[in-house]
Image (cartoon, rainbow, N blue to C red; front, side, top):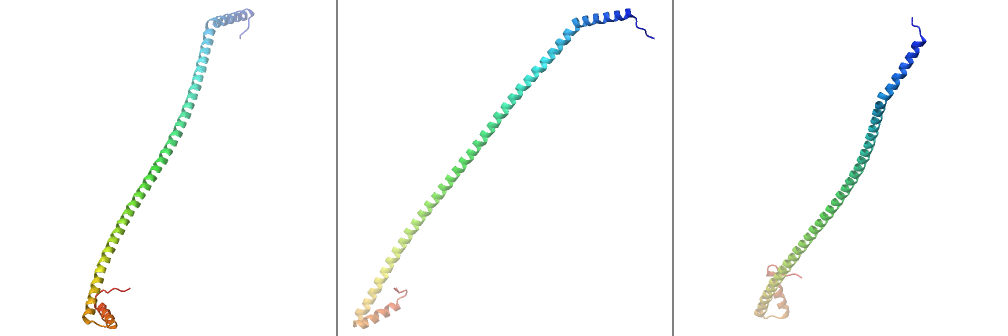
Length: 164
């Protein structure tokens, strides 16, 4: 079996420490340096990621504000369009009222002209009736009672006589 000899044990320890010192001088510094570089790289990456995150948040907020502004502008434009449309509608209604007023005025004028024409025609007929009645009265040379009867009979014989 294996026996431990004190000389061998001492030499194993001396070799171990020697290799440890050589490795610490040769390999430990580059390994620690590589670890520190990696750690610094990770810190830089994290810091850069935080900055990018903050920038993204700022951009997101800016975009939200822009969207809110665009929505407000759209609402404003819609309201203005509705106002313009309402004004146009009122203008159309007002023009229609004016046109209908003009048409009514023309119709009234035409009715008035026709009324005047009808009255003139009526006056002419009444004059003709009066002349005809006067002829009959003169021809018969009657007293007042007979004259009245003759005029009434004449009026009855006339087509479309006037009635009060």
